Image 1: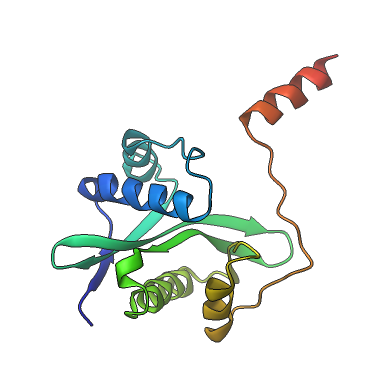
Image 2 (image 1 turned 45 degrees about the vertical axis):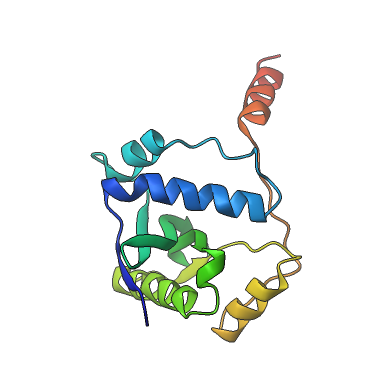
Length: 161
């Protein structure tokens, strides 16, 4: 292994933001990332952190990350949501993804959660195979539902009328 896994620090957020942008490009959503380095610092390292982040580092360079946050399932109880697990192209196949996922699973187990959840694009077969090989179950009969900021405002306007 030519990398280490550690908790992210404020100083890492510029590189974490770079990895987020790299993932957006891979997922064909290059212009979708709105979060800034300042947002990541404020949201992850303030008085009430909204997420926990782990980074993979090789030769002083951050080459992967996993960002998680707490959720609650009405069926199961406490849950950790894996928002993103990102490995740079040059590090794919090195074991870094497995190491980051292991860190997330250990962190979640230490919290005593009942489940870890995340999404994967249906066309990303390498990621699906990776997750399934680790014992994850890909629920292909569920659709992800989101309401963006514009949708929120539209909804609230409709409720007022």
